Image 1: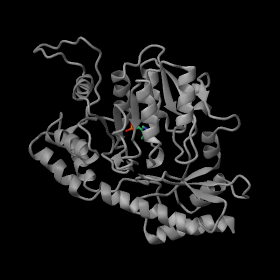
Image 2 (image 1 turned 135 degrees about the vertical axis):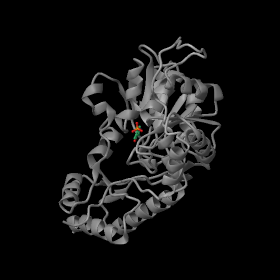
Image 3 (image 1 turned 180 degrees about the vertical axis):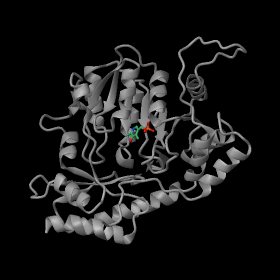
Length: 374
Ligand SMILES: *Cc1c(COP(=O)(O)O)cnc(C)c1O
């Protein structure tokens, strides 16, 4: 069997171990410590935001963002429809109600026109949660303007888009709150972890308080609020500090992968790579393609053919409005007919986008795909 080619696996560089060793040498294995403080500062400085709280997962960061936005019993929250469930599950943790908004075709992200329409139907949502899917920035200016006009906080799920830029500004910094993930398959990883960012110092301080069991400032163990065990450990943060130094390199490699696919598949009219907006620079976390429904080749054909050669690929995230758990939730699309998110889901495939992909790996993948269309 040929060497396995992964969708997106961890890529370590050695620097990570230096920070871990430092933590061991000073016995700051846990809790918190220098690596946590420095990782927060370094990430905040990289993306250009005032404050950051290092947490155990991106999902934990999204949960605390919901709490900071004040989401509670029965509150409506507008959510991206085409995303991973972790973007929207935290709404339920706080007993809010998700209303899903369809995508546009140009970046696959939340359609600002669907957002306008949603405000007509539900004038008082508690928050808007938007994802930059697969590392591609959404129409962030338009969406931010609509949220500001309605004075509703925007929560930007940048779990997949660390390092991506829209109109010169880093994703994760457009919203009132931004969220990053360092899960194993993300563009940089700490094995598991997340970060909540904001320019609101008090909000980030509050998040740290909730994340460490809501301990009141008293010598005895006193609690006036429900708390969580959501903090990142000092070891994990050490991996993050090392990985952050490699982020630009990872983006460069992923961009090269995307451009190789784009160039090689340009000769097959039924294939289209995932699009991005003018004025945006994705981090190219995952290269995806859609196949024209008139083609004899289906996305499943591609996934099966790749798997037979020990190459990992994945379907596009299944839209939230199609999920059994959200069957009773409202879904807003701009025009009648098959929703944009559903069409992308049905025609799409995520292609291997591993930083470690070699030229030969790319040739193998591309050869198999091209063979199907021949
Ligand atoms: C990975 C991911 C998350 C969750 O992050 P974790 O660190 O795994 O909790 C949230 N949203 C999106 C879009 C993701 O891809």
